[in-house]
Image (cartoon, rainbow over all chains, first blue to last red; front, side):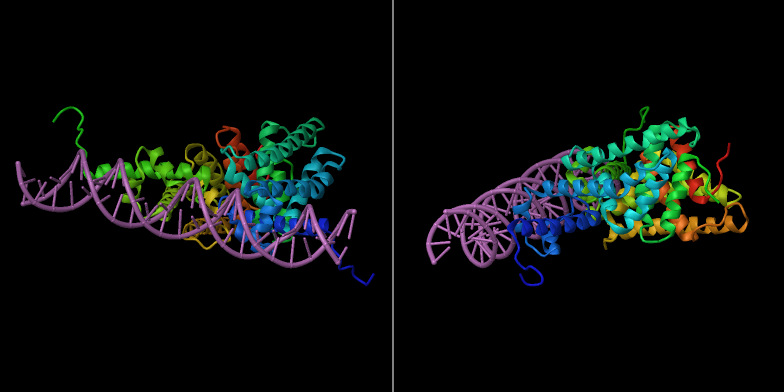
Length: 204
Length: 204
DNA sequence: CTGCCTACAATCATGCATGTATGTATGTTT
DNA sequence: AAACATACATACATGCATGATTGTAGGCAG
């Protein structure tokens, strides 16, 4: 009726609360990691209480899994899609590198990803497994792109695609995050590093 | 008297147990991080009990600080010294990159460094500060080497030395760790990445 | 308007890890 | 060898975060 509709359906309330909690959890995870993440803090940061949190998520683990899923989705939509849409494999990889640098500026999703990976590698934890799966899909993509690029000659020979892909992603993680916000150098240095790994000369 | 002297002086006992506990703590830190590190586990892993641990270290924090110090010392002795001994700045940086890859094969010190850095960045914790200082010294070294290399023409112009150094170290951390043990590709990929960051063409 | 259902808050109980205090054995000194 | 100190083990207390339970206010169907 009136200008802005103030009536909120229950589903709406639930969705907004959930989003706020997820965002707060993502910030918390990227800052403190999983173990040190305190749910009281998360809830307060989002403007709610732990009661609300436990109403929307089964437990701490479930919350973290939801964050992981959210990170995967946004990264897929904002970086992966654009990269895979490129015509040749090399351009795809470089687009991914630059896109990731930009992604790091906007979200703390990348930091979440890195933090959790570091924290859970070598463990056997559901959250770590979820991260691992997301990451493995990425590594597969990259390894295939490297293979394709070497086949069509745009990427020179080098270490096994699997390792090259692993190193490539390691670059995206750490360089992209280390430099996040130092525009425009973040993109430039990330691309330089990516080219270095791939053995492709820099553009002049 | 007899063949092998089985008599152990107190200082000896102390030193060996301390070393064992430090090693176990380093493994634990590189695997679980600081927050999730359980001292009972550390002590058992070293073949002792928490009693011994609290006898040699004031508390958990003190133990972690000792590990950080140990990492700094070994890295300095095994990587930094050899790198700085090189004649020209570019060789120093590349030596550092390759040396670090080899360092990652032997110790888990690099993993400790990375894990703690990720865990404590943005916090205000004594362990984080200690890590930060160690790391800052490194970053200074690298930034100066980059500046020197650009002055003598061996390294082309690029982003500010400070950022280039940060990216360079990010490479060492993640690539070196990600590939640790995948000899000889770890060294090759680490060097490739380092050259990429510095903008130096790969050797053929 | 009445009654139920859902979103959320507030309180309580459990578990677990740190740190402390005490006990024992092994080395060291005189 | 007796007195002492140090390395280490065992047992206890404290604190804190999770997760469960209970309580309340607001939407939504009859």
